Image 1 (tube, rainbow, N blue to C red):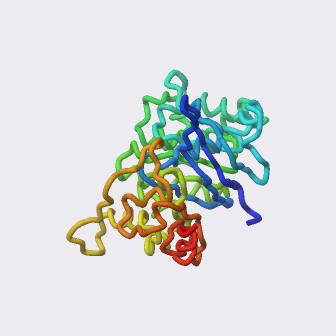
Image 2: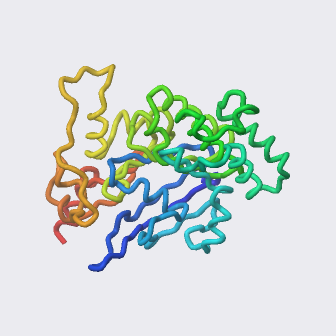
Image 3: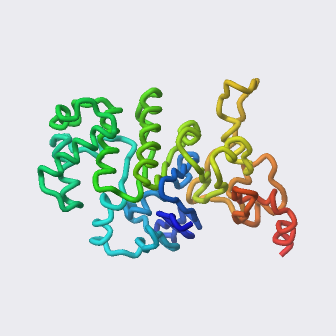
Length: 330
C-alpha cells in the first residue's frame, strides 16, 4: 500500500539466558496504513506488548530484536542509533500505556508536561506551545481546558488522565500511535469513550494506530483489522468483521466462542482447555496443537505458515491439508 505507515517484517524478539536464547516473538509481519486501526489481540503472554515495545525500541534488557525489520514510512528504524530513535519517539511515534500514571509526572502540572513535549519536538515558542496544549486538551474532551491545564495529574479521574495521555501522544503530530491496553484500568462507560476518541482522532489526523488489548469487545468497536497472536506468532489476521463473524483458526474460534452474546442463545460458553505455553516450553509444530480440538498428524511436528484465505490470512494446516501431508512425510 502506498499509504503504509508502519511495516513490520519477520520480527523476532529474543532473550539471551545462560543456557541459550529464548525466542518470545517469532516471524511477526504486518502493515498499518494511515488512518487505520490494527487491533492486536491474544491471551497474556502471547507477545502483544513485546511487539509494541520492540517497534519503539523500549524492550526491557536483556530483551532484544533478533531479526526482521521495522519501517516507518519506508525508513528502517530498528537499526537506528539510540539518539536517532529518541528523536522519533514522541514526535513520529506516540505511545499510550495501560496506566496513565506511569506516563504522567505527579510533580508537574499537565500543561507543563504537554508544553515540554511540544517544544522538544516542534519549533514553537512557549506561548505557541501553550495554545497548542489547550487545543489538544479540547480535542481529547477535557472540559474547560483553560482551567484544567494548570492542574496536577492527581486532580483528574482515571478516564481524564487517559485523555491527557492521548493528548501527549498526539502533541507533536505523530504518524503512528501504539496504544498498549489503554482501557484496562477504566470502567466500562469510560472505556467506550476512550475507544471512540482513539478511533476518531486516528481518522481525523490520518494517524496509524496499533491497538494492543485482550478485550475483543474493544477490538470490535475500534479496529479496522485484527491480528490474533498466540505464543509469539500471528495465527490469524484479517478484517475485523470477518475475523469476528467467521474466524478461521481454532484458537480464534475459541476466543470468539468464549464471549457472551445477547443475540445468540448459548447454554455454555466455549472454554479453551489448558493455558498459554511458557516461553521456555513452546511446543514443536503448531504451538496451539496441545489445546486444539481438531489437531491432526502434522500439527505436532510441522509449524504452519500464514496462508491467504480470501481477505484474511491464517496459520493452520486445516486450510492446506495437501501440503500438510507432504510436510509430515518428510
